[in-house]
Structure formats: C-alpha cells, structure tokens
Image (cartoon, rainbow, N blue to C red):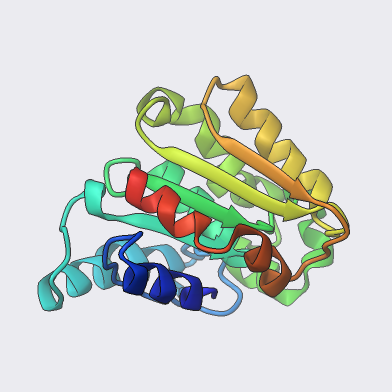
Length: 203
C-alpha cells in the first residue's frame, strides 16, 4: 500500500499524522463472516481490531478519525464494511475493488463454497451493491466515497456497476478510471499519490 506518499506528505506538513493499520480479515473471506460462522472476516475487523487499535494507540476514536481503504478483495471489503457501518467510518477509498457478481461465484473457487455455501443469494445479501441500496439514507451525505480503477482491469465492468449503484441511490462519490492500467496497485498509487490519504483527512 502506498504509505510512502503519506510519509512524505506528513514530513512536508501537507497532511496530518495518521495511523495506518493493515487489516487482514483472512485471505479469501471478502471481509465477510461465513454462513457457518467458521470464518469471521467482518467480525475480526469491526468487533476486535478497531476496538483494540483505539485502546492501544492514540487514535481519534470516532468515525471522524477513521477511514477504511483497500485494494482488490480489500477494495470490495472496505466498500461493504464502510457502507454497512457508516457510523464507524467517515470515508471509504476503494482501489480496483473486486466487486464480483453474486451470480459468478461458482467460478470463484472453493472459497466461495466455504464462505457462502456456494449460494449466490447468501453472497448477494452481503454484497456492497446490496448494502448501498439498503443503507442509502444513512450513507448519503455522511460517508465520503472514492473509487479508483484502471480501464484495463478485468473487474472494470463490476467497478462501473458499483459506481452506477451509488449514482442510482444518489450517494455522492468520486470515481476515476486510469488509462492503460490493469489490476495493479502500484500503478494506481503512482496516479493517486497521497490523494487517498488527503481524501481521508478532508473527510
């Protein structure tokens, strides 16, 4: 993750100091809890990690001091957790989010069977697209959202669909596509530089 851009901006005094926490909800959970309760990608981050960080570090322990950001599966995860818990986060930044369509989970390998019992509807219920619709009144005007994706990314259409759902629900957000970039955080970060951290600070 492009923290060197943040470090340079803090050194220059153009951004305030921030604590960056790299959260793992498990390598294949999509930051969801599994249908059988064996894998707790969401619970680990929301119920355990955030309170632990607030307890042990000098945070601003409110939504005003907390942004959630991620890339790929993490881009999906930050979007769904940010939309599900708008009382916990003031901003969301998704880089090349892995917004896989629920009807495609059969091609997603064994992790989707383990997490969602192979059932597209179980996945759909937890999907960021669904949460944008059900939680729109709480999100609208409250959570700042930014999306970045390359126009050569294999998940481009699904990112465009996320963008369209936010538009449909009148949820204000920034959306940018970058020419010639595939599924590559380094190249996206080179375009955005410290912009994602500045976005968090403004929010």
